[in-house]
Length: 520
Image (cartoon, rainbow, N blue to C red; front, side, top):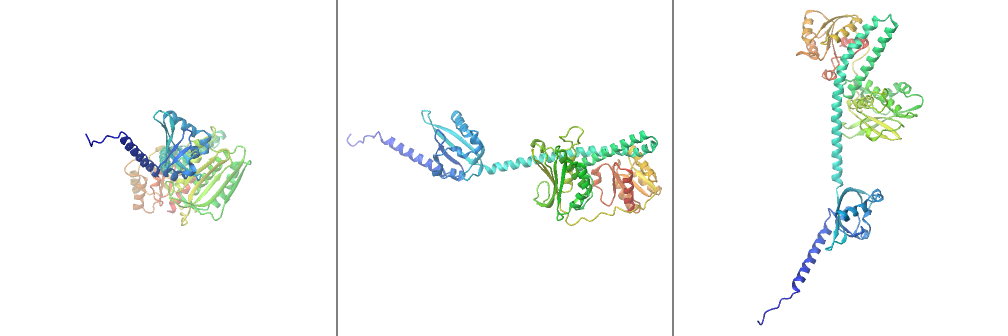
């Protein structure tokens, strides 16, 4: 059998042992070379026993700096105080694995958002050897998600505010026509009861309520950005000083008013009346936030805004009203600009003050921001665009009307509104002929002579008030046309060379509008 070689029973185990050692070496090199993940081991008590290149890159520690230290150094002080590292070890020991996301701390003290997996490692007999920890820095992804959520929330809020604006704007428009009937007929009623003191007081109370209703609808329309405004270049210093006495009298003696507006503050492009209403609303809100007294500060500062979803970017003026009051809770802060939302007791407010401020700021081409700390106070800042170049003054509002008397063609489809309007015109000394639509108006103009046409904008039929005004201008260029409407959407379609009278209107407003129309 002479030459046959006997098999060595130790050759296979030795070869297997070499292969296992090579495999472990390659695996160790692979793990140690990974840089996108922090991969390291902990002993049974949570102390670091090894460290790879990814751990050094992500956490900032060299192996000789961290091996032997407890892994709780990677947690925030608050989490360590709450026992979170020990809880993670306990869950990994019980369940075999623990996964979590949260802020972790680098060697230099900076924070990063991490996703981490902690696995318990056991030997063949089931005894705990230690723990394997894999951590990844996902700060960029986390920040992207937060920004996406912020944008989605902002979009949802914008859609909500737009829907509210459409609803409130529609209600305000319809309400204006009702107020026109009340307000117009009130002048007639006041004449009838002029000799009866009780009747006169009742009529005055009704008229005051109608004026209050008209004021509320204007605030609703400002919130919904459906109010036709008259923007012009305005000095904030001059405007604030002009209403300082009004502001001071409104806040009472137990609250101080500190106004700091530099003469170097940029002029802004705003509707003066809406600016003053917004400022009064902010000051009165600040007053109500300080029942025990305090100080209201009004500041204005030139600033620059980057373009975003709310502003175009460029040079602005930040007009800020600050109080030292009770502050606003975070869950309430996001609701304060919604119409009819109020934290005041019943009868103390309409919930339209800050919604008017919101609408005014955005309609002026700016934005509004609010900051508040409980027990410290609140600051509301309106950012208004700088007036560059200076706005050109509108046509003079002063001077006497050339049209002192004559015949007015009243074009109005609502007979109750027509009756109230005709009564006001007659009190001003005009003769009135009423028609219900634009086609009838054109026939009347061809048949008779009129000194003025007062037409509603929104009317049934193929021709509305604006179309009628354009035809009259073509066919009878010297005949003045005054347009009236309770619908701001309709007013926005009208070019500036056609004067518009807003319903409901008082006699003096009608007189001024006629004078403007007569001047052309």
